[in-house]
Length: 98
Image (cartoon, rainbow, N blue to C red; front, side):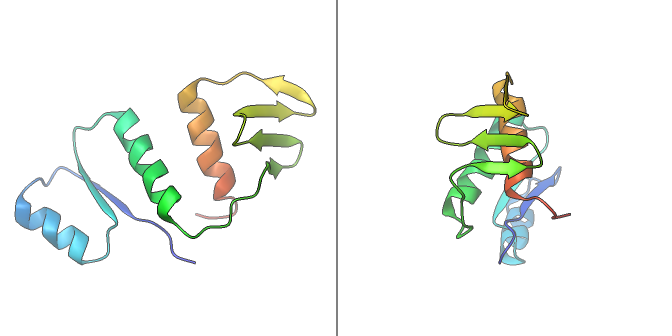
């Protein structure tokens, strides 16, 4: 299994970007950046990855349905902002990974 790599850096020169991508980064984002752009890039990398995607993600009594964007905890609905949902989905898709 491969882990997508996004380089977050202040180095914005062409040579820096080319070096970063040539040394293994899948994407290169310079500071300052918008959080929404980072999330979009994460989602894009995950869409292109070969990671198996379960229909419903679960962790203990927490469930996340990526198709309906519904989150429940112990059967009760959990209301999340779009950013909170995106972060939770990313973390649940990468459980037990540093």
